[in-house]
Length: 491
Length: 84
Image 1 (cartoon, helix red, strand yellow):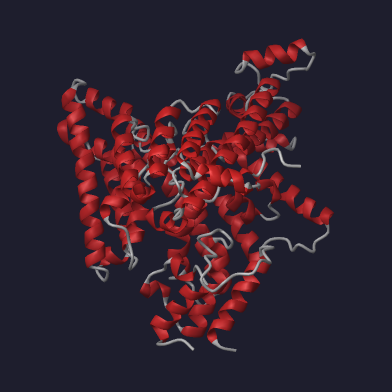
Image 2: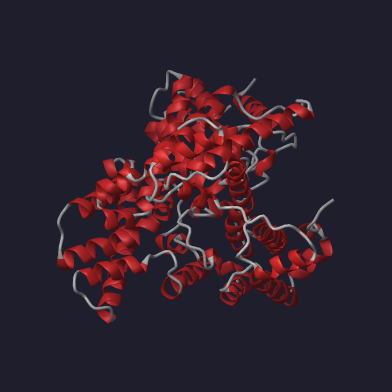
C-alpha cells in the first residue's frame, strides 16, 4: 500500500500541469506544501520555481539570476557572525564599511574563480589545470593554517577571515565547476554561477552541493513540457512524503524526548500515552563527561532514539532541497532513499547521504583510484575508500567549520576533531571491508538472511552515531567511555 | 564478440548485480540516471584500463564518459581509433 499516490504517473494530471492554469495550480500546491513542511521562504521559492516553469528555455540563466538574488537576500551559507566577531575584535564598527568589504571580497572570490576556470580550460596540461580541485582545496587549507597560526592584526586579519568565511562553504560548489571545466563540453561561467548554492536550498545552510554541479544538472534537466510536468509532480509527491516523515518525527519527539512540541504532548497525555522523557545522546555524553554515566537502559535508549531521529531527520532535510530542485525542472536523485533496505555498510552510506558520498567519491575516491596501487586491486580499492570516507570526510568538515580555528587556534581546533576523526576512520575501514567482501546481497538470498544483513548494518551505524560528533567540546575518551559503558564493561 | 557487445555484456552484469533487469539502449544514461552508482563503475574502469590501456590518471576521469554504451564506445574510439 502506498502512503503517497503516484501523481507523476497520472496521464491527465501530467497533461494538466503542462497548461498555464496547471502551472499556477502546481506552484500554489508547492508553496502550500513547503509551508506545511516548515519552510519559511516558501513564497520566494514557489515564485522562482513558477518563473522557471513558465520560461523553461531560459531556465539556466534564470537560475543564475535566482542564485544571485539568494546570495544578496538570503546568504544563509555565510557565517556573518564570524566576520562581525573578527571585525569587532580588530576595532572595526559594524556598518556599511563592513558590508562593502564583504561584498567586495565576494566579488573578488567570484572573479578569481572565473579566472581559474578560464585558466583550467586554456591550460589543461599545467599542474593547476590537471588538478584544479586539489590546488584550490590545498590553497584554502594553507590560508586557514596561516590564519590560525600567524599573529595577524588589523585590516589583514579582517580580510583573511572574511575570505575564509566566504570561500569555505562554497568550496565544493566551486569544485564541481572546476571539474566541469576540465571536460570538453562545459557550461559557460555565467551558467556555472547559477549552481553555487542555488535558490533551491531555501532556508537551509548545508554546504553539501545537493544536485552537484552543472555537469550533472545538464544530464537531468527536463527538456520537454511533459518531462517538466512529470518532474514537478515528483517534487509534489516528495513533499507529501516529507510531510508524513515530519509528522512521524514530531510524534516521536513528543513521546520520546518531550519539551519541544507542547500541543502533541498535551494530546498524548489526554489519551493516556506514556511520555518517556529520555535524555538525548548529547545529554548522555555530557553526563558521561561529568563522570556520571546514565543507567544502562537509558544509555541504550538514548543511542537508539538518536539514530531513529537521524533516520527520519536526514531524509527530511536533504530531500526538501531535492524537491525544490525538481520543481525547478531538474530530475535529480533523492539524497536519502530507503536506507533500511541496505544489506551492506557501503550500500547504506550510499542510500543515506547520497550527495555527500558523491562529493567524496568524485573528489577523493576516483582521483586516488585511478592513480595509486593500480597493480594491487584490493589495496587500490581500500586506499581509495580511505581517501574518500576518512581523509575527504575530515577535510570537508575541517574546511567547513573554520570558526573553530578562529575561536581556538589551528592546532587545538585540529586536535579537537579527534572524535570525528575516529568516526571517519572506522567508517572508512568498514566501507572498505564491505566493498572488498563484495556488493549487495543477491536477490536470491532468503528473506531472513536479507533481514539479518540489514539488521547488522543498521546496528553498526546506530553504534557508530555515538562518534558522529563534529563539535570540539568532548574528547574521544568520553565517547569511548560511553561506548564501553553500553556493554557494561569497566572503564 | 565485438567491443560494443563486450561493453553491453559488462554493463548488463553490473545492472543485474544491483537487481536491475530492465533493458537499456546504447544511448541510455546508466550512471547519471542512478541505475548504476559511481562505485559500480569500478569494474568498468578496470576493464577499460586492462583491455584498452586507457590511463584515466593521464586523460582525466569523467563519469560522463562511462554513462552509456555509446559514451564508452566513444571513449574507446578516442584512444584506439575507430571502434568495430
